[in-house]
Length: 103
Image 1 (cartoon, rainbow, N blue to C red):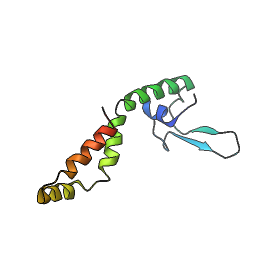
Image 2 (cartoon, rainbow, N blue to C red):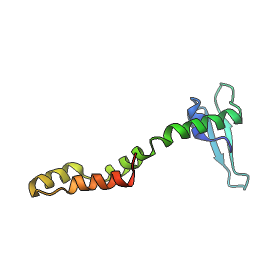
Image 3 (cartoon, rainbow, N blue to C red):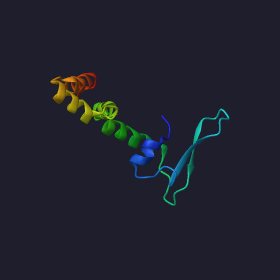
Image 4 (cartoon, rainbow, N blue to C red):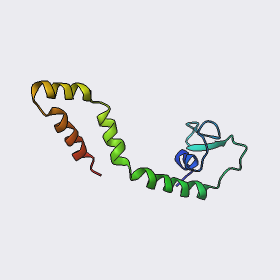
């Protein structure tokens, strides 16, 4: 593994303020530019923090995936139309999304 922005952020550093990850497209890959006055954490500390970030966010992946789909819906209009037309389009759509992204 390498130093990642997620690992650095997990350690409390801010992207663009404390550090920048750059790629000069020279074939050498991504490298870290350290901007903070604080000591730069070791690669192993950043890797461990990245794993913690993955554990914390991985447990909520279903919620992020659901939200992304919910945000594409005009839910109030769907509810209004369902009430007016005696249909269940909104409930059916929400249940489909929940089915695709179970807890």
